[in-house]
Amino acid sequence: MEACLRSLRAQAGTAAEVVVVDGGSGDATREIAKVFADRVLVHAGERNAQRNAGWRAARGRVVAFLDSDMVLDPGAATEASTAFCQDPGLGGLVVPEYAFGAGFFARCRAHERRLTARGSARFFRRSAVELAGGFDESLYGCDDGEFAERIAADGWTIGRLDAAVGRDEGRLSLGRAFAKKRSYGRKLYEYPQLPRQERRTVDHPSLVTPARLAKAPALTVGLALLKAVEVGGVLCGMAEQRRAQRG
Image (cartoon, rainbow, N blue to C red; front, side):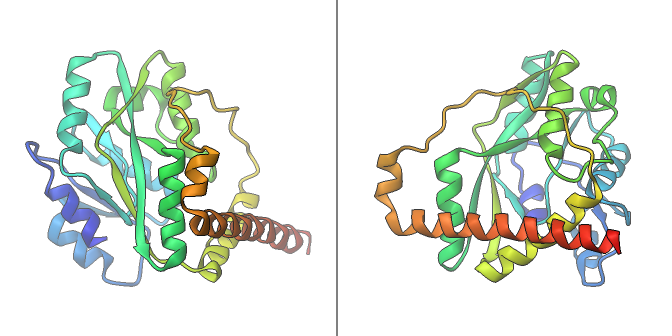
């Protein structure tokens, strides 16, 4: 959390308004947030309800959505602001994502990000967000892509930043990855509404090639194992929740 907020306060050339939405945590999250944020809200709903509470409380014409384990590159806010000023039809901006952390499987995750050039739309024009009605609070999975799809369906374009955002994986292990996806699977089963098929609002080439995979064989094998464990966690969580609901 603190690293995320420090990265927001370190944005060069812009006075970013920082709104933190806390889900009722029992740790020092709110105390840390009060040091760096302009406003701290408490909202016990799921993450999309928290996101909607955050942008509605903010006053800027450009809004960005970050998770607490993310660190934003110093020039990202300025680059985004310039892009929205130059293109009045621009509704959102995809931010490329990289990963970092401790241990072998954190390096595998970083390998995955380098291979896929993965990113999600995180900066939006406020008027585009208002027109779309914010995030769909009935969704738990695929919500980022679904939101960008609705922005594009309203006639806005979706661009892409050069600046990136890093996600801190911490000390990633197979057990931790399984437990996280198991919890995700339980929640995903509780939200059976599936999003519409996502349109490709931003085209970028995949970087996954046999040559790139072969350059880091140990990381490639570790990544395959990590993904298999995560898929297993999701399926396990969904099966557990299905059994619980059936009694």
